[in-house]
Length: 393
Image 1 (cartoon, rainbow, N blue to C red):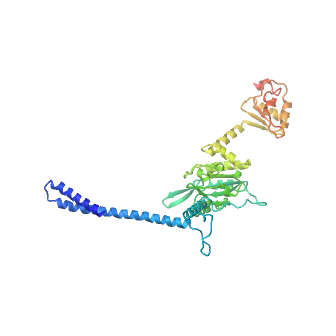
Image 2: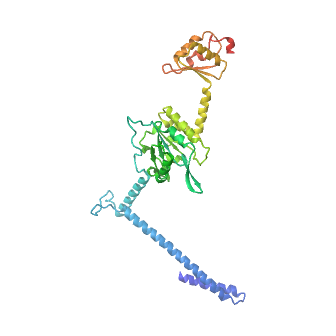
Image 3: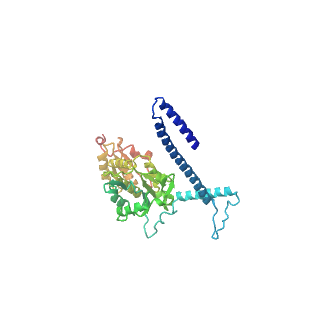
């Protein structure tokens, strides 16, 4: 390298003298004296950098060899002797390779699997009451949102959190906070968020799995029947192993006018009140919508509006009351008259005699003992003799 530098120095000096000498000036040697030291300084820097890179590469190779040796060495007993394993009959390089591979795979599996295979204790037994459903909720961007102010970071509470926890708490739901945050950060926040103790259990990042760089909550280790587990989260990758248990919400970013938790409470209470046997069927239906809670709200609104156009007839309704009911709604074709008992249907049949005008109302007779069959019910097609012809026009 030194010979190359000297050669480049001579060539550089010659070119400098020739180029400047053509002008006949006396600055030839001054120009050469300025350029050559600058070049040598740059050359010295380059040599230093190359030596550092080579040294860094050698260090990495040395570290890799030491790491491979330590990872592939056989285990020792208390006396310091090698323990015989299944790789002892292989050649020495293959022994080290297979031991290192086996231990590395074991390390990866340990980092992926949760530390505990049973995240929650066994369900409560009699005389204590165990809620039928388990509600697993993410903390960040579902119940709270980290917010920066001039005083530093703070956690902003989502509107309606207190009402939400109170509405869905036991005995309706067993509430479990399962957050992707570290427990040292999340648990002090939960102490302030839930002073009344509506939250039954708390789980943090350290008991979750790590898959492809994501913190994944494996519900198999919850020690609960998955047909009765509802997970509320804003990240679908968090429940990628059991997506049918997920109710996906949009992340809350601090909007003060948010009403999601109120709608969510109504949705959960509806599931609990109807005693749904497998919540995954319900969640799968609503997961097809971008905003499942808004879709549920629309469905409930439609059902309420439809219910206003129905008249329910009780079992102890008298004949005169049934006649009044028909007279009140017979002129409207948007009214459903629901008969909830087979005896009421028989009363209607006794009231109707010989009129040939169709009745513009639907009569439904749901009954366990007498399943309703519209094709066999003549009341759907005719109402005879109950009203004057003028009443049916």
